[in-house]
Amino acid sequence: MPKVFKLYVKYVDAINRTVGRITMYLIFVMMGILIFSAISRSVFNAPYIWVIEMAQFTMATYYLLGGAYTLQNDAHVRMDLLYERWPVKKRAFVDSITAFCLIFYLGVLFYGGWSSTEYALQYGQKNYSSWAPPMAPIKIIMTTGIFLMLLQAFAILFRDIATFLGKSIKLETEIETAS
Figure 1 (cartoon, helix red, strand yellow):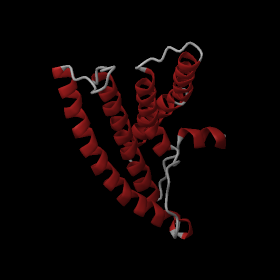
Figure 2: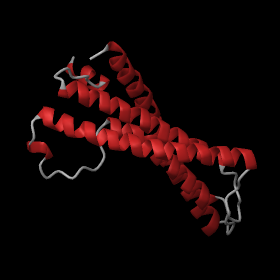
Figure 3: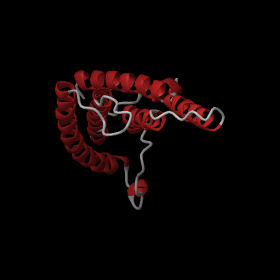
């Protein structure tokens, strides 16, 4: 496997691991927002119109920025009827076909996200709610998350091709635990 592919996988994995581990803490931010909402509404009788929508934006950020980390750790759902019984090379071959499909899908999503983000920035798009927050920040986060997943899908493809060719590219975490 050419060195450029190994470097690509190494750096994309490092970026997505860092972003993913930081993103994990957003669940606590969302919980804090929801606790604030419950306390302000029930104890102080002062409901805020922005809390639920802000919690939704936080959850969307959590999912979108954590998606690449989930792909990296192979933590997504897989229907396993035959997969575990196959030899490693056959799994790598099938995974590389799946990676091509994923790359196509994420490419289309990225294209749509990019144009949607441009629209939100150009026209100052606001959400249709009583709070009416600007949509550009969440659309930028959405497009960034999709882009990181796209980069990770290419890293997965390169890793699968290397495994199929008998020249595996290990994850940094696999290297650290092996030594």
